[in-house]
Image (cartoon, rainbow, N blue to C red; front, side, top):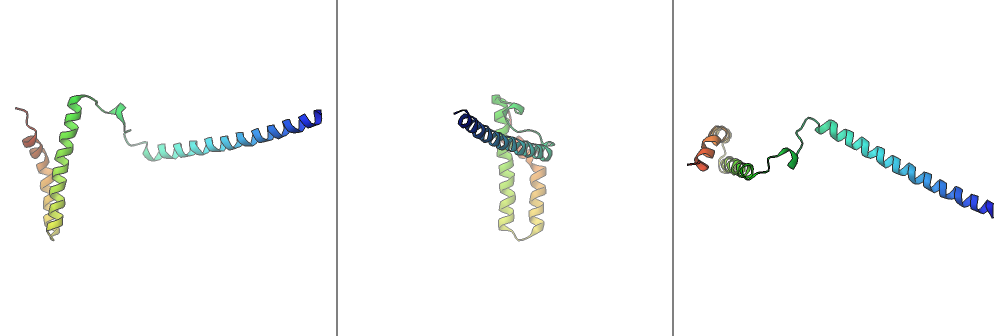
Length: 111
């Protein structure tokens, strides 16, 4: 009877050792992946709510900025779609970049 118990215990220990080895390999693989990700994206600012202002004014400013960028981008894309001249597209880019603050002020002026 004790030989049978010893054999079963050895089988359980072998299965547990195999499972522990697999878990360790998985943990090592995740660590390598995380290190690779940190190396590639470490210089970027982290995204998420902890680095962002969360108030009403900040939300309004983000929405206004997104609207301004969308309008300038739409103007450049329309210029690109309806003209064949690369110079016109470059001019639209330059005018959009220089005119974006003026457009923003005109659209969202506080009086």
